[in-house]
Amino acid sequence: MKIPRNKVLLAAAVIFIAAGVVSCEKIKDAAQFDLLYEVPEATIGLDSTLIEVADNEQVMVQKEIYISLDSIRRKHDLDSFKEAKFDYIRIEVVTPASADLKFISKLKATVMAPGIAETEVASYTGNGTAGKTIDMVLEDSPITPFLMNERFTLRVYARFAPPLPASTVTVKLNSRIRITVQPL
Image 1 (tube, rainbow, N blue to C red):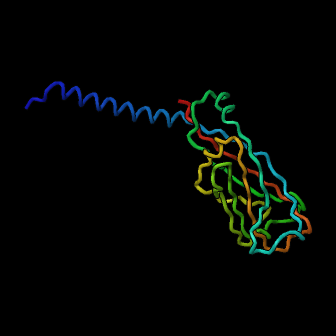
Image 2: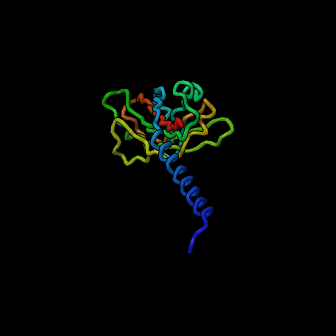
Image 3: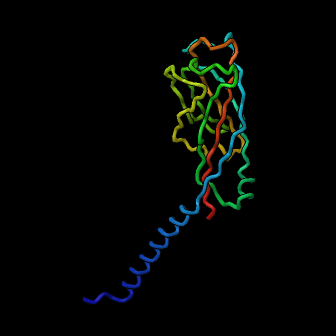
């Protein structure tokens, strides 16, 4: 049985186009790269007389973050961003040097921006063994919509299990955002 030539050409064209689309996607994926944005750190002084009991969640720190995606686009000659997520969110003891973070029983980090609901991006549930650093467990929560606002807020809520290791403990909040871009 002979297949008409126009059907063979049509089938070949469909295969060629499908292969081209798959190849283009592979090229886009291969060309993507990550930009890392170190969020300026925030330092927080915790006063033992102001810390509430363990059952009360309170805002430990609130940090405004400004990222100009237009500047990033121009600098790297980009058309679009694929995704943005936190790479890490970390709390560290600054003073006293002998202190640890065992007095923190729970942390929750959220982001918010005008017109976008507050979204949880990381958490930590203490087990009484925290050292000088707590690396929060990141959610699989893209923050790309928040970056589109150019200004958004990172807020860390805490539950404390007093007593603090000193009358005043200073900690710092460090975080980094990973922006995945596709230049094509």
